[in-house]
Image 1 (cartoon, rainbow, N blue to C red):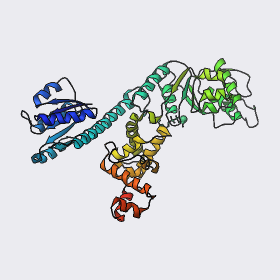
Image 2 (cartoon, rainbow, N blue to C red):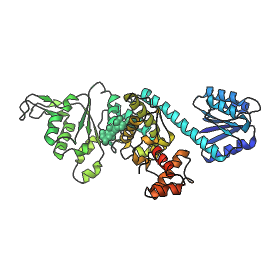
Image 3 (tube, protein in one colour):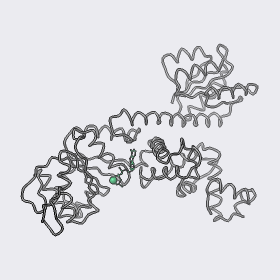
Length: 448
Ligand SMILES: Nc1ncnc2c1ncn2[C@@H]1O[C@H](COP(=O)(O)OP(=O)(O)OP(=O)(O)O)[C@@H](O)[C@H]1O
Ligand SMILES: [Mg+2]
């Protein structure tokens, strides 16, 4: 992230530069507005520190210019004690925040990091709009980070080729979304996409569901019925939980894949079949093969292209974007006006491990939107597991730059846990009246 610092006072300029470079910002300094304007002509800055009293141009005018050239940047005003009123004025004009001189390291870093987070969210919102409209993939399929961008590329490539695909990934990572996306952008898109869960049927049912049956094939077969393969002819069949398919069915499926023909149950006339199979599993098929539970020849037939989806915990950069997406989805579904998530709540979600991956995140946001009465999601709307995480190694002093409220919450939680929720003892340690502790616990949704 590129930062510009415009201040005629050399000490102040260099101080900010030094502190922010430690926080991994890329910083350039300018002694006046005109030198900054020259640079601005061929470069963009994401975060701009502007001294209100510059020798050549008024700081507020610089702010206006910055905001009009790049509305996606954030400006921070630097001011002396005397000019706090104009600083407040500046924030009304769109400045992110202001710093008063003498400058303190802590304030500089805190505000810069907050601005960075805000910019990131803005950026992700923007990419969200782009991915849901212009990416060519299906609507609502979100992923801005490099891991998902690779997956999108792969999907686009695979969609155009008529081959079977095996999706291997943990539960809730979006296997079904990938399958639908492949179908939707493939030349087969005008033909059906048919879903079949291999785990939820008995062997006989799987046969009649997949292949259909002729009238009188078995008791109860009163009429001839087309199977899913036939219905999907020309399109795509998504075989979910393929690892659960019984051995005897695996043989039949292999046969279909080899011959490109099916026989209805009780039928004698083969029917030509043209389908793409996308199979999905969250089990390790290689291990199943070793254990004798999955046919190796079928595995190779299905696994022409293998797509492994990353766990959500391994692509946390997508979390803010997914949250924005789910907030939109559920506030419109529940007819609510929820617009955002408080930074403390986002922080907690960023730290969480998500064993249920995207589905779990979606459920968390859905629940929070159902619970909130305001236009934002707060910490108290998140499930308890999240609230209680990360306390073990929490030390307010060494912690990353957290909002004050979050430090307070974590500290209270820590003391309560250490005292086994003995509130008398906890309030003594915290040196606050018990009623205050009780109010704080209520505010932070700490139960005990
Ligand atoms: N990249 C994504 N963008 C938006 N929503 C997503 C994304 N990935 C997953 N989801 C949502 O998460 C939920 C789970 O996704 P999906 O059903 O595709 O996962 P899965 O891998 O098939 O899970 P399972 O193995 O449990 O069947 C769905 O509601 C889906 O809409
Ligand atoms: Mg699924």
